[in-house]
Each structure stands twice: as C-alpha cells, then as structure tokens.
Length: 363
Ligand code: ADP
Ligand code: MG
Image (cartoon, rainbow, N blue to C red):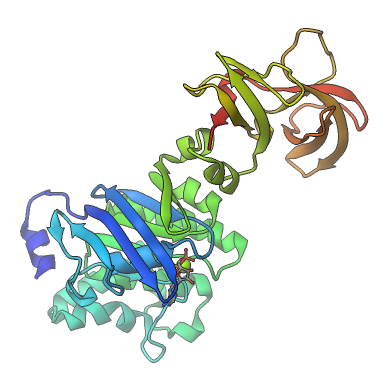
C-alpha cells in the first residue's frame, strides 16, 4: 500500500528520519544514551563507532526490532516509535545476509513482494529490475550456498530494495567479506545509492568505509553521538579527543594557550589557527600527513625540536617516527612522490605544520 502511494504519487521525497532523545538500557548497561539525529530524505549517513558503542541498538530502534525506553523515532514527520517492524516498511540488511537457504535468488528477492501480495506480472518485473541493479540477473536461479559472500550480500540488498522502501538500514553489511571485496562492494553500494536515491543508514566500525561512502558521519561512543558532520569535517575538525583518535591517525601534543599564543611542552611556539576562546591547557591535534620534519633549523622557527628515531617504508609513503627534546613521540607521514629532502634516522629536526592543519581541543 505504501508502495502504491509512492508509485502513483509525485516527486515528494520520502525517507526522512528523526530521532529524538532515544535511550535504551539493557540489564545493567546503557546501550543508547540520549541520541538525537535528523536524517534528510535520500541522505547516506553512517553510524561509526567501536564495538559496543550503541550503533546496532540505534539502528534496531529505527527498524522497530527494539523499542526505546524513552524518546521518539519519526519517519517523514510521523511518529513510528512503537510501530512494529513489519509495519514500518523499511529495508534492513544484516552482516550475515539472512537469506532463505531453500529458496533461489529470485525467490528470496520475490519473498517480500509475495508477503505484500504483489501480482505475478509486477512481481516478476520488479525482481528482474532489482537483480539487474545489483548485477545478479544471470544468477537468478542459484541457491545461496552456490554463491560467494559478496554475491549473497547483493541478494540481501536486492531483497531489501524489492518492495521499494523509503529507507535502507544496513548493519555492517560488508563485515564478513575480505578487504578487496569490501572495497569493491562499498563502491557498488555507493553507486546504487546514487541510482535509487533512497535514504541509507549504514552502521560500521570501519572509519575508511564511513568516510568514503557517507554524506555525513555520526561518530558514536558509549551510547552517545559525539559528532555529526561531513567526512571532511570529521577528519579535519574533530570535535573532541575521542573523534580525533578514532577517525584516522593523530598526533596529540599537550599545549598551553594564552592570548592567541600556543606553547608546547618546552615552551616553544606552535602553529595553530582555530584557537579556543578561553586560555588554559589544551591538546593540539595534527595528522601525520600534515606534520613536516625539517632539518634546516632557524632559531625563530615555530615547532617542536627533536630527532628522527625510526623510519618505515610502507609503499606509497614513508612513516617517520620523531622524538622531541621534551620527550613527545610524534609521527610524520610523507608520500613517496619525490626522493628529495627526507631526513634520516638520528637527524635533528623541527616538527611543524601549517597553522590551519592543527585543531586545538580543550576536552
Ligand atoms: P555496536 O553495534 O556499536 O557494537 P550495540 O548496540 O550492539 O553496539 O551494543 C551496545 C551495548 O549494549 C553493548 O554494551 C552491548 O553489550 C549491549 N547490548 C546490546 N544488545 C544487548 C542485549 N540484547 N542484551 C544486553 N545487552 C545488550
Ligand atoms: Mg553492532
């Protein structure tokens, strides 16, 4: 019915989700703690966080498989908090595929349409169309056990798309696949998202995946959302030390901030734009690819003095380990695009960076 309404309707964009102050406790533990989030129709958003941070529980409350202790879930401005899962009409895709083993690919994909009593002709048309979308049209009569993990997951995606839900919920869908296949399938899911234009809420603990796929990333920790931003902002302007450390590699330098001047542990001046409003102790974050190690030391240059202690060739880049005179351990990553001016182990250097590449965090 929902499907018919949308099919015959105009271009009204559906699939907006709003979460208001969601909380969920299990015996003894808070799984989700006051989560609020507004997701636009057609958006691709990831819930990113370590294991146990509340991602699945949040997704299951959107799906209707878990009920929150308090708070609300809205779909296109209508409250669905207590609506059972089968009446929400949302597509759900799990890590373990959850296909019916005794049904062929086509029967698996047709199943949700049969449940909705879609007529034979339309059912066949839809099954064919979604199998084409996930490039499985030639394998329609296979059984799940005759397919690779990547192919099975594509069947699960096709099955979730078949009944034209406004929102797809994906819980670590690539978690069981090897790295190369993950990479391949994440691009396919991204392309599919562009094609079908549906809202996708994607749970993952893999930061690269979240950054590469999403319009926005919500970073979760201990049941709370710590930051929701575009991937570039999550990486370049982390809101707190947890986000800075979880998403990518980062150098953390304890600093003192006084009237616009940032001083390192040895009292040296350090480059930083975006300073906090209040003076005091803070942490300066700089990514390894932004940290430069230079041998030519002018007396007035801002930066941290020390020596290169180790270097490691990793193919596309060289990783240089650096120990400052004050005892800080820092890492610099230099792309191997030119052979010139790379310092060597034992060389005295100054570590510095562009002011705009540093983030100062006070919490
Ligand atoms: P994530 O998906 O980020 O790994 P979950 O949402 O699965 O995290 O879990 C969040 C917290 O809630 C964890 O501490 C987990 O142990 C707990 N939890 C999740 N599901 C249950 C459950 N059914 N019973 C008891 N505790 C649970
Ligand atoms: Mg999970």
